[in-house]
Amino acid sequence: MSENNYHIGTPGVPWTSEEKQQWFNEQTIKRSYQQDVVALIDELTPHFDVEQYGALDYDIERYPLFLLKSKDWHADKPTVLVTGGVHGYETSGVLGAMRFAKTHATSYSEQFNLIIAPCISPWGYETINRWNPKAVDPNRSFYNESPAPESAAIMAYMHNNTIQPIAHIDLHETTDTDNSEFRPALAARQGTVNKNWNIPDGFYLVADSVKPEHAFQTAIINTVSKVTHIAPSDENNQLIGVAQEQIGVINYSARELGLCMGFTDAKYVTTTEVYPDSSTATDEECILAQVAAITGALDYIIAN
Image (cartoon, rainbow, N blue to C red; front, side):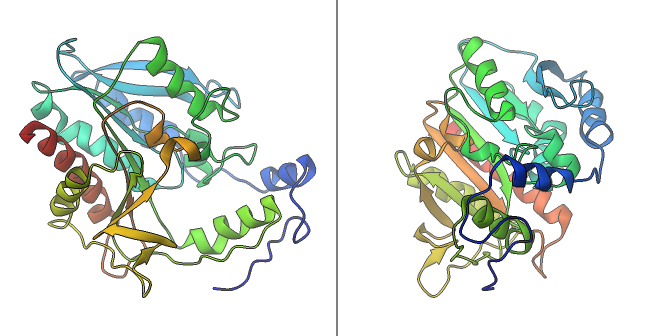
C-alpha cells in the first residue's frame, strides 16, 4: 500500500473544523448499540451490578455508557478492569468483553473484583469508526481534560470511586480498514504522510514500555495461541512498524500516548490485537481469542 491521498482535505495541510465536519457528515449508522450491546448487558443483570457511568452528549438517550461490576465486591480483593470498544469499529473487543462476562467472569469472582466496560465508544460502534464524531481518537485521549468524552467518562468513574486496579486488559482489533480508511484519514487529518502499512496476520499484544511485565505478556500469548495463531513479525522483526519485544508483543509508552491501558496505575496492563480479516481466522475465533487473553492474564496473576 502506498496511496496516501484521502478524499477530504488538501495533502500536507492539517484539517480544520470544516474538513472534520465534512468527515462527520459522511458517517452513517450501520448497526445498533442498543440491540447488540445494551440488550446483552441487560441479560447479565442477575450476575453483575450494572452501573451507568455516563452518556455521550451526541445523543444521551441513544448512547448511555454501562459497565458490569462484580456483585460480590470486597475491598480486600484485587480489582481487574476489562475494557472493549475504545475503538468502536473493533467488534471482537466489544463482543469478547461480553463473552467473558457471560461465560467466565463468575469463576474468577472469588479471587477478583471485576469491572467490565464492554463498549467505551458506542457511536464508533454504530458507525464502525475509530474516531468519535469530532474526529478525535479516544485511544489517544486518556489524559486530564480529555477532548474525548468517551475517554473522560470511564476515567472519571474510576477516579471518583477511588478504584485502583491491579490489572487492566484493553481489547482491540487490527483490520484491513486500517489501510483502506483509517491510516489515510489520519494522515489527511494531520497533514502528514503515512509510511507504515503493515497489518500483522494474527494475534499480538501491545505492552506498556514503562512496565512491560514480560512474563505476564508471555502467559497471555501462550493461552491465546491455543485458540488462534500469533502474528509473525515482518522482515525487520517488527509489528506495525514497532520492534518486537518478544513473540507477539510490542511495547508502547502508554501514558505518554494517551492510551486506554495507561490511564490507571495498574501493575499488569496490556492491549490485545486480533485480526478478523485473516484468511485463517473467523469472527468467533477472534472473540474467543479475546476471552483467552483475559483468562490468561487472570490465571497468571493468581499463580503469581
